[in-house]
Amino acid sequence: MPVPAPTRTLARVLFGLALLGVLVVTHLGLQAQKGFSDGCTGFGDVVITADAVGAAPEEGGCGEVATGEYATFLGVSNIAWGLVFYIVLALMRVSYAYTGDRRLRLASFGWVSVGFAYTLYLVGLQAFVIGSWCILCMISAAIVTTLFVLHILEHRRDMSAERHSAPPPTTKAALVPYGAVSGVFAVLLGVVVVLGSSGEAPAEPAPVVTDATTPEPAPTEATSLAPPLPMGCAYDPVFAPIADLSEFTNNPSQGTGPVTVVEVFDPNCPACQALHGTLTAIKESNLDRATFYSVPFPLRPPAVGQAAALAWARDSGAYFDLVDALFAGLDGSWGMSQDELREAANSVGLDGPSLVATLQDQTTVQPLLDQVQADANAVQTTLSTPSGGMSTPKLVINGRVVANTTESLTERCLNEFIALAAGVAPSGSSAVVEEVQ
Image 1 (tube, rainbow, N blue to C red):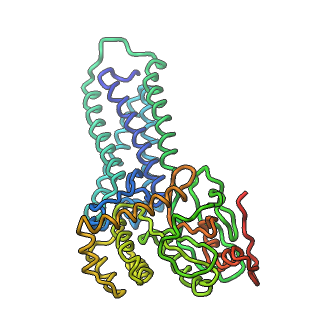
Image 2: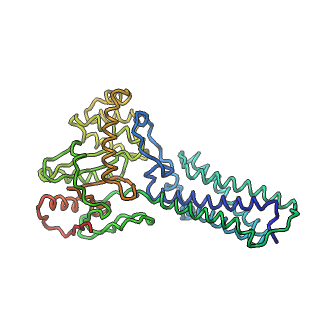
Image 3: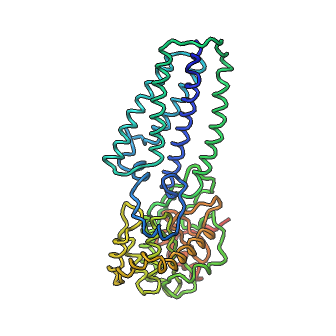
């Protein structure tokens, strides 16, 4: 039985919306793999302006909704359920177009009704329980709602038993529009995967390894075209040796040794916090072997205020104390309010009210923003991946970028890297340093 003429256009629209849902959920999954390091939509850029300095902390948003306590159902992530929902719906719609079997249309209606009910539940969670909104999740919710309304309309038209006077199309002709939509979908899916896969997933905090065993390397994106990170104490094979680090050597530093160590961090990043703690212990025994440079890099606009506060403290003698205080204040939000920045400055003996007054005045804050921008430009030019992605932390030792793996960022491996860079054979170490091929 052919698809009734009054509902053919609706049937094609429903198929297209199902494929659009696949694109949205695929993009959401790719951003979740990267920890939403590029913002909720995946297209966030660092905006270093006075407005960014005054921005309130950004709440959990997509990360809290998509990967938090309520992110799964029956042990399976809601992202995976969403992908299954849209794929099954698309298959039902194209099967209905091929056969005209009304049972498939009714099954599609029932499937969407269940999806709509669960969507209402998820929206309610965001509104009344989690207290954060996921933009991509809400786009998906809008698609499901539209699908539900259009299914009602399709059902009413079909039940009216109206028939078009023109002869129904052949099966082959009926599928032509679906093939065209599928072709567009395939192209867009490729674009979504390429764009969504660019950049790097934030590394997990690196635990200290106390024995000679080699832990598994930190997980990387399954869709990344970059070579896998090597095991053991290793430099990152993605990055060639950096010949010139002079853009970083005017930053605050500790130590006077010949080895140049550059630490790039965002004060909101848990992995950066873990690495900073490891480096604190390492500095105590390597101040004569290395000079440790500190480079704040705000990954997202709400972090600009913290970077500006660190720029303000550069010449105060308490810069590194303020870094410690900012990491101590790390919580589930992204960024710190100006009140929180004032308290952090006061806690290390700096003049917190003076800091806030500086940040609130366009004339006095602009030189700080210029410094943050200069650091950000240097980091992005030097330490972006070939695909243009950027993540924190980054640690560079004499021009070599250390691999973001659980072992390479341990105290044992980093001590060995510094000793080898200083021309001192490390004693009692079984680690093997991987060279860039």
